[in-house]
Image 1 (cartoon, rainbow, N blue to C red):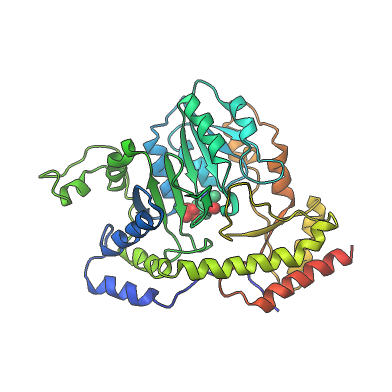
Image 2: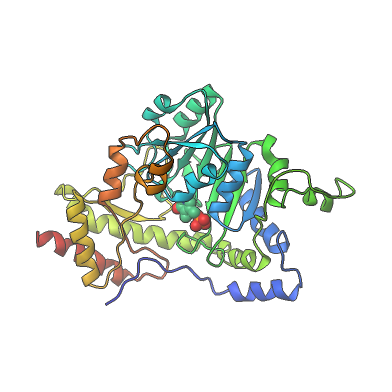
Length: 380
Ligand SMILES: *Cc1c(COP(=O)(O)O)cnc(C)c1O
C-alpha cells in the first residue's frame, strides 16, 4: 500500500485551455485567461481588485512593497507559518517581530498583539492556517487603533470565510497561493494578490508590470507608458492562467470532495480525542472550513515521531509542518531583539501532523489511514 500526502487536482480541461492560449499567439501575462481568472475572484467574492501572480510568495512580495515598509520599520508575523510570510517583508529591509499562536489553534493570538506593537510597527501579517480564519474583528480593531496595515496570508484559504466575509478580502491586502499543494493550482506555481484598500489599487498594477503604467496605457487612460515606480515581473504566463481557469471552473466540486474527506477523518479519529490522546482541529468562531488540511496535534514530539514512522512503514505519508521561524538559523542571525519564547508555536512545530488529503483520495484510503492511526494508539 502507498498513500501519498498530496496529489494536485486535475479537471481534465487543463491541456485544452493551454492549447487555446497557444493558438491565440498571446502567451505573455495579462491576457484573456488572466483576465478571466481575476474576474472570477472579483465576481464570486466581491474582491475589489485582483492581480494574478507567479506565486503566493510573489503576492506577498507585492504586498510588502505596497505597504511601503523599509529599514527601521517593524512587521508582526506569526512564527508558525511558511517562510514567505516573513521573507517578503525582510527583503524590503523591515525587522520581523514574531507572534505566538493561540493555545488551541496555530493561528496568531490576538491577545498578545498589543504588547508587540511599537511606534515602528507598520504591518501585521495574519496567516489563516489550514484555511481557517484568524480572529479578524479583533485584529482589524487593533490595527486600526494604531494606524497599522493588515496583510492576510490567505495562501491556504481559497473559498473560506469569516463571519460571511471571504478570507483575503478583509485586510488591506490579501495573498493567495496556487502552488500544487493547495486546493487548486495554476499548473504547479501561482498566486493572487487581492487589493482591498482602494488607495493601493493604482500602484499595485504598476508594481505588477515592472514599475510601468502599461495597464493604464492599454485601457486608454494615458497616451504613452513608461517607468514610473519600483516593481518586478509579477505576472504569470497565460499558459498558467489557462491551467488555473480549468481548476476554477471546478472549484465547488473540489471543495465538496475535500470537505467530505475531512469529515471522514474527523469522525473516524474523534475517539482518540475523547480519550485525550490527540487534539483534532478546532474551527474558530465565525470561521468556515475549506478543508485545505486535516491535522492532529499529538501529545509530544516523541509520540509524533513514532506515529509518523509507524505510518511511513505502512506506506502512508503523514508529514509534520512548520518549524518555528523565530528559531530558524536566519531569524537567529538577524534578530535585534533576541529570540522570543513562543511556547504555543513550538508545540505545533513539535506535535502537529498532517494526513493525506486530496481530491482523488479514495474513501478506502481514508479508512486505511484512520485504521492505522487507531492501531498505533492501541499498540502504545
Ligand atoms: C503555500 C504558502 C505560501 C507560499 O505560496 P507559494 O505559492 O508556494 O509561493 C505562503 N504562505 C503560506 C501560509 C503558504 O501555505
